Length: 173
Image (tube, rainbow, N blue to C red; front, side):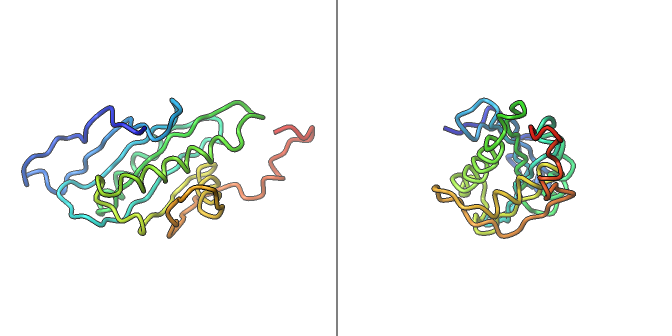
Protein backbone atom coordinates (compact mmCIF):
# COMPACT_ATOMS: atom_id res chain seq x y z
CA UNK A 1 0.00 0.00 0.00
CA UNK A 2 2.70 2.51 0.97
CA UNK A 3 6.19 1.91 -0.38
CA UNK A 4 9.41 3.90 -0.38
CA UNK A 5 10.74 4.53 -3.86
CA UNK A 6 14.00 5.87 -2.44
CA UNK A 7 15.87 4.88 0.73
CA UNK A 8 16.94 7.31 3.43
CA UNK A 9 19.76 9.45 2.10
CA UNK A 10 22.53 9.95 2.94
CA UNK A 11 22.98 6.25 3.69
CA UNK A 12 24.55 5.89 7.11
CA UNK A 13 26.02 2.68 8.42
CA UNK A 14 28.37 4.09 11.03
CA UNK A 15 28.25 6.45 13.98
CA UNK A 16 30.08 9.02 11.85
CA UNK A 17 26.72 10.05 10.38
CA UNK A 18 24.96 10.43 13.73
CA UNK A 19 23.25 13.79 13.92
CA UNK A 20 23.06 14.28 10.14
CA UNK A 21 19.61 14.72 8.63
CA UNK A 22 18.50 11.96 6.29
CA UNK A 23 15.70 12.31 3.77
CA UNK A 24 13.51 9.64 2.22
CA UNK A 25 11.77 11.14 -0.80
CA UNK A 26 8.71 10.10 -2.76
CA UNK A 27 7.15 7.70 -0.30
CA UNK A 28 3.67 6.65 -1.34
CA UNK A 29 1.13 7.00 1.46
CA UNK A 30 -2.15 6.26 -0.29
CA UNK A 31 -3.69 4.53 -3.27
CA UNK A 32 -3.68 7.65 -5.47
CA UNK A 33 -0.65 8.80 -7.46
CA UNK A 34 -0.56 12.23 -5.80
CA UNK A 35 -0.42 10.88 -2.25
CA UNK A 36 3.32 11.06 -1.56
CA UNK A 37 5.50 12.38 1.23
CA UNK A 38 9.09 13.03 2.25
CA UNK A 39 10.55 11.97 5.58
CA UNK A 40 13.25 14.02 7.33
CA UNK A 41 14.95 12.53 10.35
CA UNK A 42 18.11 12.93 12.35
CA UNK A 43 20.26 9.85 11.89
CA UNK A 44 21.41 7.91 14.92
CA UNK A 45 18.52 8.96 17.20
CA UNK A 46 16.69 6.54 19.45
CA UNK A 47 13.07 5.44 19.27
CA UNK A 48 9.97 7.20 20.51
CA UNK A 49 10.65 10.53 18.85
CA UNK A 50 7.94 13.09 18.25
CA UNK A 51 6.69 13.43 14.68
CA UNK A 52 5.22 16.40 12.81
CA UNK A 53 3.31 16.12 9.54
CA UNK A 54 3.87 19.26 7.45
CA UNK A 55 1.20 20.42 4.99
CA UNK A 56 2.13 22.95 2.30
CA UNK A 57 0.10 26.00 1.36
CA UNK A 58 -0.80 27.27 -2.08
CA UNK A 59 -4.49 28.13 -2.00
CA UNK A 60 -5.43 24.46 -2.50
CA UNK A 61 -4.29 24.96 -6.13
CA UNK A 62 -0.50 24.79 -6.14
CA UNK A 63 2.55 23.94 -4.09
CA UNK A 64 4.15 20.73 -2.97
CA UNK A 65 5.93 18.85 -0.21
CA UNK A 66 9.24 20.52 -1.07
CA UNK A 67 7.85 23.94 -0.13
CA UNK A 68 8.36 23.14 3.55
CA UNK A 69 11.73 21.39 3.16
CA UNK A 70 13.55 24.02 5.21
CA UNK A 71 11.03 23.73 8.04
CA UNK A 72 11.21 19.93 7.88
CA UNK A 73 15.01 19.95 7.99
CA UNK A 74 14.99 22.33 11.00
CA UNK A 75 12.60 20.04 12.88
CA UNK A 76 14.76 17.01 12.06
CA UNK A 77 17.88 18.82 13.29
CA UNK A 78 16.08 19.18 16.64
CA UNK A 79 15.35 15.45 16.78
CA UNK A 80 11.73 15.60 15.59
CA UNK A 81 10.82 13.40 12.64
CA UNK A 82 9.25 15.61 9.97
CA UNK A 83 6.95 14.20 7.31
CA UNK A 84 6.17 16.66 4.52
CA UNK A 85 3.11 15.62 2.52
CA UNK A 86 1.88 16.29 -0.98
CA UNK A 87 -1.84 16.37 -1.49
CA UNK A 88 -3.69 16.16 -4.77
CA UNK A 89 -4.64 19.49 -6.35
CA UNK A 90 -7.94 18.91 -8.15
CA UNK A 91 -9.69 21.70 -10.06
CA UNK A 92 -12.12 24.03 -8.26
CA UNK A 93 -15.45 22.39 -7.54
CA UNK A 94 -13.82 18.96 -7.20
CA UNK A 95 -11.59 19.74 -4.23
CA UNK A 96 -13.41 18.85 -1.07
CA UNK A 97 -12.67 16.43 0.53
CA UNK A 98 -9.72 15.26 -1.61
CA UNK A 99 -7.06 17.32 0.17
CA UNK A 100 -8.31 16.38 3.64
CA UNK A 101 -8.35 12.70 2.64
CA UNK A 102 -4.74 12.99 1.49
CA UNK A 103 -3.54 14.59 4.72
CA UNK A 104 -5.47 11.96 6.70
CA UNK A 105 -3.74 9.27 4.60
CA UNK A 106 -0.36 10.75 5.55
CA UNK A 107 -1.27 10.78 9.25
CA UNK A 108 -2.51 7.20 8.98
CA UNK A 109 0.74 6.23 7.20
CA UNK A 110 2.78 7.70 10.05
CA UNK A 111 0.72 5.71 12.56
CA UNK A 112 1.16 2.48 10.57
CA UNK A 113 4.92 3.02 10.16
CA UNK A 114 5.68 4.40 13.63
CA UNK A 115 7.96 1.52 14.57
CA UNK A 116 9.91 1.74 11.31
CA UNK A 117 10.35 5.50 11.81
CA UNK A 118 11.15 5.17 15.52
CA UNK A 119 8.39 7.61 16.41
CA UNK A 120 5.77 7.67 19.14
CA UNK A 121 2.39 8.11 17.38
CA UNK A 122 1.03 9.58 20.64
CA UNK A 123 3.44 12.51 20.05
CA UNK A 124 2.04 13.49 16.65
CA UNK A 125 1.63 17.10 15.58
CA UNK A 126 0.54 18.87 12.41
CA UNK A 127 2.03 22.01 10.88
CA UNK A 128 0.59 23.81 7.91
CA UNK A 129 1.05 27.09 6.13
CA UNK A 130 -1.84 28.99 4.55
CA UNK A 131 -4.16 26.41 2.93
CA UNK A 132 -2.02 23.72 4.57
CA UNK A 133 -2.75 25.32 7.94
CA UNK A 134 -6.44 25.06 7.19
CA UNK A 135 -6.07 21.39 6.24
CA UNK A 136 -4.03 20.69 9.38
CA UNK A 137 -6.75 22.23 11.55
CA UNK A 138 -9.51 20.31 9.76
CA UNK A 139 -7.72 16.97 10.11
CA UNK A 140 -6.92 17.61 13.78
CA UNK A 141 -10.45 18.61 14.72
CA UNK A 142 -12.69 16.33 12.68
CA UNK A 143 -13.40 12.72 13.38
CA UNK A 144 -13.78 9.99 10.87
CA UNK A 145 -14.68 6.36 10.49
CA UNK A 146 -11.05 5.26 10.60
CA UNK A 147 -8.69 5.08 13.52
CA UNK A 148 -6.43 8.10 13.17
CA UNK A 149 -4.05 8.71 16.03
CA UNK A 150 -4.96 11.72 18.12
CA UNK A 151 -3.18 14.88 17.06
CA UNK A 152 -1.41 16.40 20.06
CA UNK A 153 -0.71 19.80 18.58
CA UNK A 154 -1.34 21.96 15.53
CA UNK A 155 0.72 24.90 14.35
CA UNK A 156 -1.17 26.72 11.63
CA UNK A 157 0.71 29.58 10.01
CA UNK A 158 -1.62 32.13 8.41
CA UNK A 159 -4.47 29.73 7.65
CA UNK A 160 -7.77 30.76 6.11
CA UNK A 161 -10.41 30.21 8.76
CA UNK A 162 -13.40 32.18 7.47
CA UNK A 163 -14.05 30.24 4.29
CA UNK A 164 -17.26 32.13 3.57
CA UNK A 165 -15.15 35.23 2.95
CA UNK A 166 -13.33 33.32 0.19
CA UNK A 167 -16.49 32.56 -1.79
CA UNK A 168 -16.70 34.66 -4.97
CA UNK A 169 -19.85 36.72 -5.61
CA UNK A 170 -21.22 34.08 -8.00
CA UNK A 171 -21.05 31.55 -5.15
CA UNK A 172 -18.86 29.09 -7.04
CA UNK A 173 -15.49 28.50 -5.36
